[in-house]
Image (cartoon, rainbow, N blue to C red; front, side):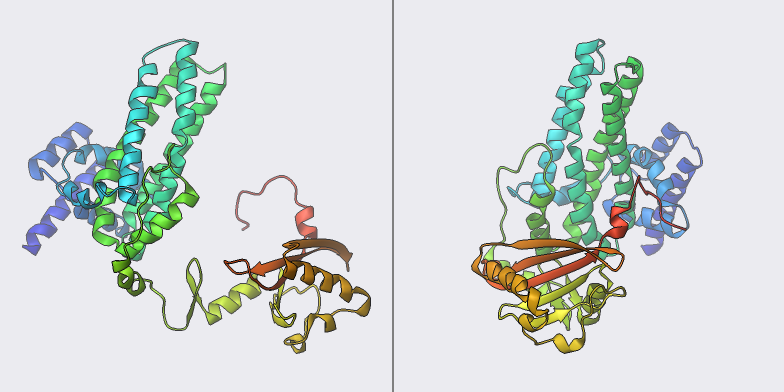
Length: 399
């Protein structure tokens, strides 16, 4: 049996390689129907992983990703696997599917009718439609920043890489169409041609999301993963409309969430992620600024030790009251700030001074818990002279 599976996988790989080598699309499609009939999500995933391992670049796979989708269109045999979540109101899968339906309606009702018309009115309606279509960025961003990380942790890396690359191309093409529509000198036929091409690519991506991505998620993500995705989704946003229903964790799954939290021994858990002590210490010391924390009682509890310190901070100040760490003539300023923080009158205070050839930005922040109770004061000190001197843009990494 395994020999038959490997043989099938090899034939699939050979077919895709032939497409990349220039094989006629229709001929490849007929060959696929003849030898395979249907293909599973798992096979597509394994295929892309194998091609990348053999040295085929992600960009190369991405280049013909739309052709692959067209070859496989209507032939994916395990589409039914996503039905478990598609009818659960407010679940991230249901929301994602609903957005794809909304995308289809936008293409059918607001874009395609005007691809076959001419004149200023048609172009104006396309401009309105593409401004709305640009909101697809939020749909793609949720997929890329919330869905993909969970797949990557399971070792599924090829489909996310390829799909993300195509997403970026679609974003770029939409922006290009909007620029052309805004330019009165644009050739109408060129605008229509590019707008039509975008429409095809968006629709192809809808097919790949529904038939490839969502089954992968259903097979590999735990209940806790979906809780994480659901809680982070509002921050990124949604395509044109917020979900009408919310999906919340059932208390009976509490044990599942704890078991799948992924917190390792010796790690400190944060609202987002976790770090072990060496990582946390190194991270704080790598920050391009100095930080000092004074606890609620006014005692120095911590300070970072970056490579370029602005003010001296000997280890002996740990545990000292903040009033003993400043010259008598300025200590009242610090005490007034802390008292304002403690009383709730203020939440931050900023100063900037010239110091030994540097322009130093000194910021104080009240640190409070989720209920607003005062925990202490954070001092952040940074030499911003190099920042003030920046001009123009830098978009490429230094060699």
